[in-house]
Amino acid sequence: MSTTFSPTFASLHPKNEFIRRHIGPSTEDQTAMLKALGFSSLEELAQQVVPKNILKKKPTDFGEAISEFDLLNKLKKMMSKNKIYKSLIGMGYYDTITPTVIQRNILENPVWYTAYTPYQAEIAQGRLEALLNFQTMVKDLTGMEISNASLLDEGTAAAEAMVMAHSMNKKGQATRFVVSPNLHPQTLEVLKTRCEPLGFEMLVQDPLKFDFAKTEIFAVIVQYPDTEGRIENFKEMAEQAHAKGAFVIAASDLLALTLLTPPGEWGADIVVGNSQRFGVPMGFGGPHAAFLATKEDHKRLIPGRIVGVSIDAQGEPALRLALQTREQHIRREKATSNICTAQVLLANMASMYAVYHGPQGLKKIAQRVHRMTAITAQGLKKLGFTLNSETYFDTLSLTTDKATTILAAAAKLQMNFRLVNDRTLTLSLDETCSLETVEQIWMAFNGGNSAAFKAEELDKEIKSQWPENFIRKSAYMTHSVFNSHHSETELLRYIHMLQNKDVTLTHSMIPLG
Image (cartoon, rainbow, N blue to C red):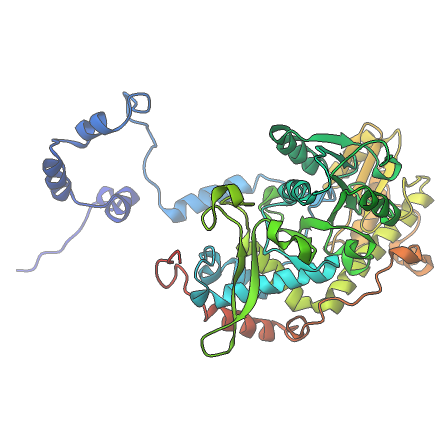
């Protein structure tokens, strides 16, 4: 006689499945383990093991267990209440178009996102090649000789550069450094926090007006272009700083450097920044892969890791971590990095973005962003506003008594501008902006009404031109890897060729060398 199994709905509750899959051993197994340890219950074990200040008298009520499917539905309902505005705030963070081939095969691919620090080069050749591409891209765009394989963010990269510059300063024992007030505010705050325990004094003033003869300093830090969009000529200032033994640190924007004279060509000793706008979503403010590039002479002081090309046992080219400066690898007092120094996954996304678009593609994106900004500027002038600077890349700054009114009008149009102070506004355009975006910006400045002119009309009459010394003339990203994989299929094959060289958490545990 057969019996039909008909479980109750309660017995099929997700809680039971959750317990079976995640809590672990059965009641009998738990009892046996507790007996072996000398306890009669989990509560008795907790009383003996968990510190009294942590142990609660009453168990925490987490509520009923819920399945992943139901949880995602609840979260979607909650998230649907959010209003996604167009962000034109800038300050180093921009909306970007992540190529789907990179989103699917890097960001959402466990072979890439579970890949941890490449301790063992033999099983990390794919990751190392992608990071070598990142270094090459940064080195070329900044005009420097060497770059590391990423850092945490732009603020901490600037702080690392500050410490590095002090170590580079052999001439004297200077503890002061000059910082432009036009750095991104978050970078200024990180520098302020980091320099205090080190005994450094941060002088926040315009480096172009600083008297290097009167005050001994070890470094100057500038933003290029600055946080309000201005592009300054720092060449003469860099010469004055070098004459007094100080080093020049430039925080810069990789996309802007496809068009602007790179810092390495006007005298910077260290260049920092982040690579977020190279295909990495903003992610509510982070994380994003930063970079630090410098001259070959300073490679022993560079924080983070450097991927280098070597030769394997068969005489073939092979990649390795040519320089590791963490306390895991060398004596702590010699280390220039801590345990959290890189953003490997996001650096690889940025490097693949550069591989996909190539030097010409990046340049076209930069030209389009700048052109869109120039059209916006022309329209604002027609509406009666005056810009604070006529030299800009993607960010416009203006001072007006109507700042708060304009900000409110922008919010109604679902756009966010940056309010620097009661009278100063900035807005930054990016590769996702269109002529429609430009016309909406004008509406915010025109009391919510459409302007009497169209963006297409202004596009025909604009002749945007920087001073000659700002225009980049040197080549960049000439290596074949940046000039070979410009279709989705080609990049897909390249990504899979690299990932097939690696051992990640999709294959096994990752050995630590």
